Image (cartoon, rainbow, N blue to C red; front, top):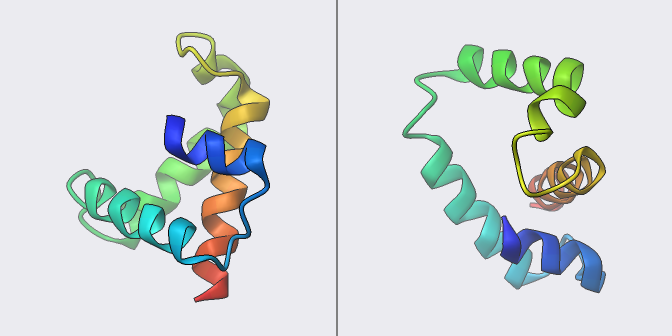
Length: 79
C-alpha cells in the first residue's frame, strides 16, 4: 500500500518498470484470496460501491485508495 501510494503521489508513470513490478507482486498476493475472476469482480464491485465505508477502518482515505487502484489498473492496461 505505502509503496503504491508513494508512486501515485510521486507521479510515477503507470508504464514504468517500477509500477509493473508492484502490480506483479500485488497480483501475486491477491491471487491467494481470489480463486477466479468472479471473486475479483465481486471484490471490485464491493469496493466501488462501499469504498468510503470500507476505508474508515484503514489508515488511508477512500480517495487515496481509489487513486492507488486506478494506478494499478493503468499499469495492467499498459502491459
